[in-house]
Length: 321
Image (cartoon, rainbow, N blue to C red; front, side, top):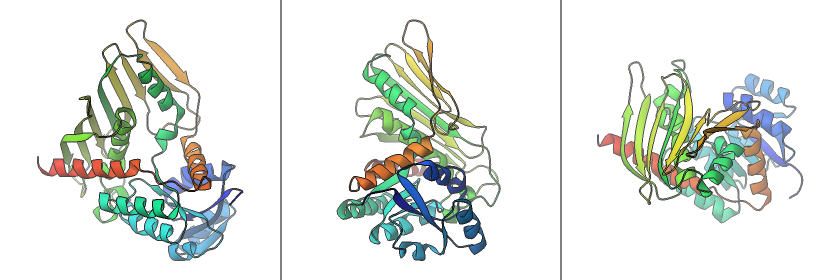
């Protein structure tokens, strides 16, 4: 197939409205052709904003011949079901994080996509922001010597009681919502083979799900990663790396605004420096990467399977404490 990838939106979630649909509308490699939802009025309103067709229900979207790919921003508990249905219908899939709530479900999705020549991508947007490639280059150039430690934190303020992040039946909880980010950051910089050696999940007052957590991971080379996450905190979003000769620190690491100049603070043992990075829209970059993968014949995001293992291992380790 040639031309823009024709995408159907499965649901009217806030992340779709605020970030992904505007990014898809700007991207030359994608075209939003339909929006499906359970609320006809809300679906029609969102479709009208983006000049596409409203569709009544998710199954109808997957029966629409004009739709080549789907974006799944549904509650986490529904990701596996509808991502699998989309793949079985022959559609490429961009699914919000986490791709599913258990590693067995993610494995099934990856195997299905790989066996069908379809693109499957978990929507972890920050890895598509260019400043993290700059950090990787600094590490590869041994700007801070040999890496010895990593820490990452992502916490956000409390949402309303009916927010899906606070509802256990919809796959809510700090681990699934904010824990994904520091875990993926650890994988991004420390590589594969991370091992969870300790974890804690805390259900704070007034919560029915875990509202905060922490984990200790160890890489095969012995580098330790200290991670924390939460849903009832002041906003914090950043990571730091320490080596034998210095450190690298990045703030607003996971959800920077598309118009925000960002900074990388480098202390390489000489004069500390701030490396300013120009604004980037990581949602746009993600959409372009997904469309390119689909047009290249389809690839499954194998890292999402490793991340599913880490999420499972964090939960298991926390249950033992």
